[in-house]
Image 1 (tube, rainbow, N blue to C red):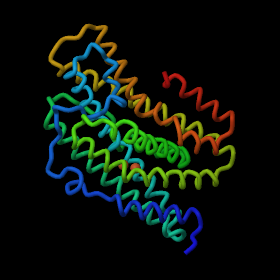
Image 2 (image 1 turned 135 degrees about the horizontal axis):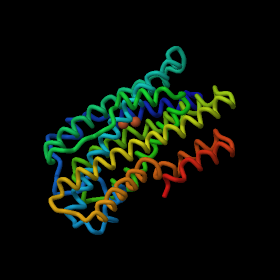
Image 3 (image 1 turned 45 degrees about the vertical axis):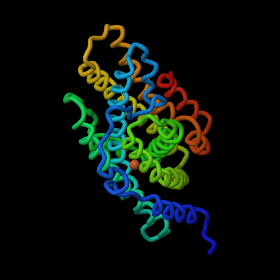
Image 4 (image 1 turned 90 degrees about the vertical axis):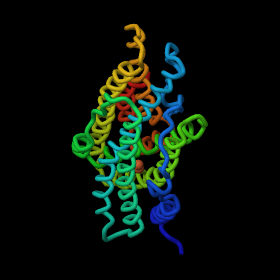
Length: 307
Ligand SMILES: [Fe+2]
Ligand SMILES: [Fe+2]
């Protein structure tokens, strides 16, 4: 049967989603615990290897703290992503039934991922000293994000879900020394996210076609504001994570080392959630929607975060 191009892509996403679909207990956790003798977040993302005044055990601890926040950040963004996906599924209620099914599955998967990341947070918490705090609150962040136009929210979502894929492929999969359970969590997450990134692009392009040039111009500003809001979260959480590390590391650090640690964690978070996402496919998709002046505006806004 010959289907229109977009319908065929939605149908493919459904097919892949069915093949990749995981159960949190049966496929991911499988009765296991996190191995605290190993790192969680690989060096390619945590950049702990740049902090040369930390010994191997301290680098591992910092990778575990970062890995804990990494899971919490995805649980956080999935709150607004699920809500937006379910909202835009309305456009397909009486139209393309493949698109509707693909988006319902997408929303369902994000609700499951949030449950998985809550489980992980409680399992990791049980194995680490008290005092960690994850500061951003999912509903508060969602209400700010969802106050922006759909174009801007889909842009941010596409951005996030593309870098999720890149992180797994380029850093997590390649590191054979990570906690096996931690690695499996992100293997399964990556498999389901692969469909999301395709659907984000389809929906974002579909939304883009509805906008007037003036609406798009405003939406570009909103996307810039959203990336700024992400950076605000990173500044806040990197500070909290560095403080927690300094409290539980078990020795004193000089004020110079403490400052270097704080700067190193913020730089790692900016790498994870901003810089690594700006490269590659995202810029290609965005580049087809915006004009040169808008592109320059985005570049100027990102420049201070890219160092
Ligand atoms: Fe997810
Ligand atoms: Fe997703």
